[in-house]
Length: 433
Image (cartoon, rainbow, N blue to C red; front, side, top):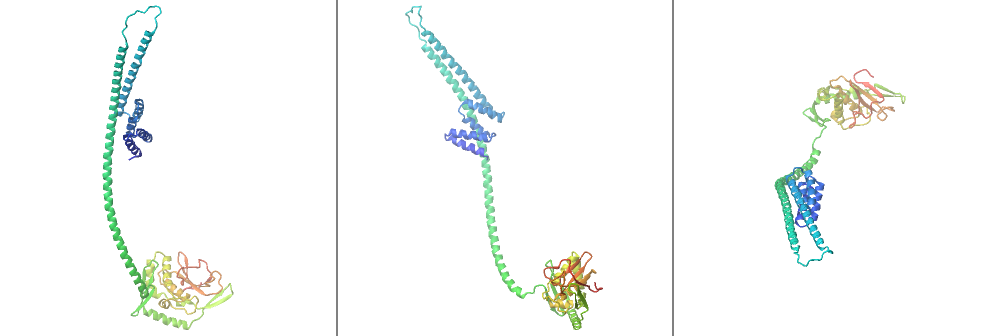
């Protein structure tokens, strides 16, 4: 319901309680705020005191609501009433003037004629009769006009009553709808309360389960085996590592490979020769080191790396996955100890120093299908762009797209050096570079 309708209802209450001036002001304010409010107009016209005010208001009303049957009828009756009243006033004002003139004429003194001593009939009774008749006619006309006005007002009240009745019926329907919606909301609220209680019970139960699982986990993490791990049974070695996407990479290697690499490693380590001479132009020094390329062996990884390469989205994704496997090995010594090991020795012993990790990584890359060029880069790990000594070895993989530098001992960054370093590069299995 609009604000103007609320104001009209409030004004009607005031009118019926006898506060007509206040009610009239509210009617007037309602039509000022909403000129299309028919009920406010009808009550406003009804509240006016004189016919002239009502006629002026009705003319404005009909300009807003043209061809309004009740309004046109009320205006016609009020105009007729005003016309009759005006005619009656003209008659009433004319007759007393004539009587006054006659009386003045009778009172004029006559000097030339001697008055005749005889009785003259008095006109006063006739004047009173005429005045009485005029009064009766005027009263009848006024009463008739007033009756017509009351009829118009009664018709307006009837129409207003019908409008109020229609509004009441509409409000009753709206009340029933709101009542029905309220009942529906009560049912929904009850269902939600039940659901909330069920959810609360489920939450409490899950919380208890969570606490129990937390206790179990604390016990389990000290007894369970988490990747990466190496498990040996019946002369077979099961290796499990975690891939970058969180899945597990598993493969089985015969213990014969480990024994073979141990024998070969012992033989080579017992007869180590410092075949490589590394000249440092910055310090004018020459370093003699073991050629770690002799320990590279991709054979044990051929099947595993072929499958891993075929599953990878790109060459770099494959290289990164291989680096991730090697990075999961734990033991690492930062200095070259001149005791290089074959890749299976490093893998199955759980780690090694920088050349051991580099040998393992290079062996796994060379086991993949692409014929990439793989190099060992001997360098100064503390001064990668201006070496002061030689204390570290990394791997370079040259693909058709780009060359990649790989720090095989890092667990966080595959290449912490950038694209430019200064060191000594040796291609594995090919002519020295």
